[in-house]
Length: 403
Image 1 (cartoon, one colour):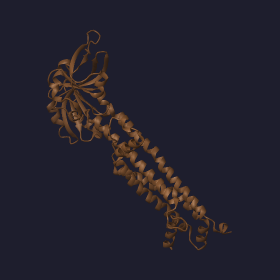
Image 2: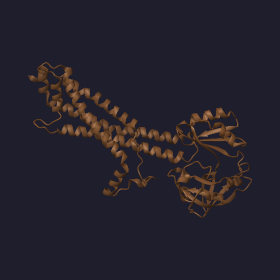
Image 3: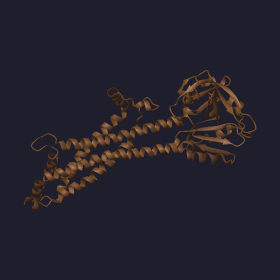
Image 4: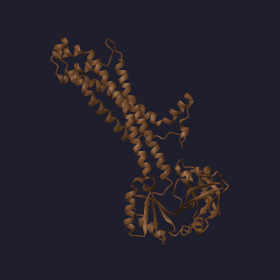
């Protein structure tokens, strides 16, 4: 009996009187597969952009910064106290200060970092398009972010002024204007390029004379552990004079916004999948109407409502399973080759999508857990909504139809 019902389910996939798939089967399967593929692709691209943003911002700024009022007497001792924490990947000392850069008639704010080629932990050395950190040690030299250099209208080997203001008596004393030679340009492809500059530690101490001395920069293996690691480090150091600031305080809101945007876009794109499932149900409902006589005959032969339900639940399950499989296949392939896909579109239609981004490619990362969640949601929706037409078929009144 079950075998006979299975044959009926499979028969509904084909055209009447033919062994070819019906348009209902083809279109509904494609609808589900396209919905799944688009959702996987969009989530993967959002994962890629989030990862790039994390690398290009959190790869530059310290994950945790330690600063002591009056300065560390011996920063090496402090670093040794926290070195046993397995979450810490590396530590170093540096200087930093927000100040003003001036070039002729252009004035802008910038974050100046005092560093050197040995102690620099960021990814900036890997993204230097011109120059080297070694060039900082030869006098008053400076390395600018590409966006900052463009804003100031300056090129390598030209000079830019650092404006030093006396913080204790800003109105009484004239600001010092100290020229620095541009010996390098870096571009990490984020907003860091527009407000970051590097000078040597020696130059930093001579022009700013920082009261709190060097700061300690901490890089973590997992940037998401910064808040907890910050609290644990302060407890281990046990000093009221030491303050710790994590990256969350400066860029946490940005990454929360990116994650919220990812969720919202995923929900909006999910509507495509939902529409595809509704189309499937409407098509099945039309199929039931067209075959009411056959359903009535099956009921008169003694088939129960549950068995009639199984016919159409199985039919919906077959279409849904094939659609989900094809959707996963198309979505993963498209996600892994998204840059090539857009380059292909650019050649055909003459559009340049990548010009609006700071990248020359579309970053895409396929997370297995995201694919699993998408599949579970799709299966749940198909089964949940599939019960509706199946119940309608099962509740068909054979007497009224036969009459």
